[in-house]
Image (tube, rainbow, N blue to C red; front, side, top):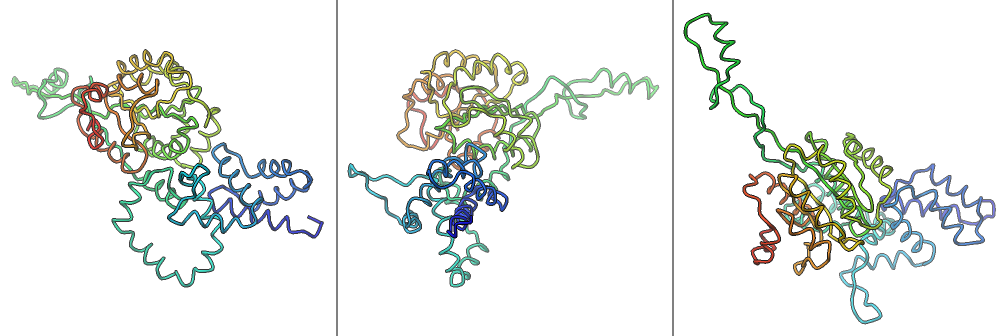
Length: 413
């Protein structure tokens, strides 16, 4: 900038704020942002907004955080004091006299905006901070386990991603149609028995035994990435990446208004590279939801390929369908018949008073074997424990719901 103002310094401060809030902003982007603003000028606020947006935002999931940061940083001169107030244990009353919590992303932004003040107090708080980092107590871990993904700060989200990377999802082994040699097997192995008799050359034929091979069944994940599921699906992608790289025969499909197979993309070892490939391949992120249409595409194009060996299916969605659940019941019934177990993971189950009132939920629930929440680390650990147990007889979550046997503390356990 050649006008002697401080716009370049302000753009640099804005870029630091975005970086602290979690956006991948480096020196190169700051220079490009200054050049973009020089090109469009400062006559119109919209031009200024879109110039910065074009430089700093390259993924759809970054748009909401950028919007919040832009409107707070460039409109309100006392933005730091205003955002610092979000850390207080109070909420701001609305016009109708009710109270509402600040949006979840605002906390990440508030931490980034308040970074300067925290650095100023770093010396006097150093001892306390070192003690906290050196002894991550059981109560702290328990709090993180129970905290909703929507309410986590940037630091807590990073800690949760690391916990998801370490999380193991054990699947009980099932018998296959193939056999393997085994000294204590219950079935004789004619081929190995004859070969042993030829080698020995004696009149005594030593019997050889075999047993069925056992291996974990395939795991198929159908994950909703619509607007109502956006924040949960982003965290769950880290969980799915860990699954796909921990075992074989894991198939991941994302759906919103259309179905996308991201199995190969999410199998990249580097999680950032894998999620970047997934983001580029999915065109309908944070859009609407057509669950019936997407399940029909899966049943038609993929079911015979990935469900042929008794797969376990995880359906991750809140059950909100913009098409009023048209055809969803029939597609769910077909999916249920094609797999070994069908488990519905719904983040709305975090509410004690949740009931399946939407048309989509009422079409899905009669066809699932288990109905579980998926909104924090504890719910994913409960899922791991459930999948490690033998499946037993298939049960109907809908019948349990209607009988009143389905309870919050004991969801199809």
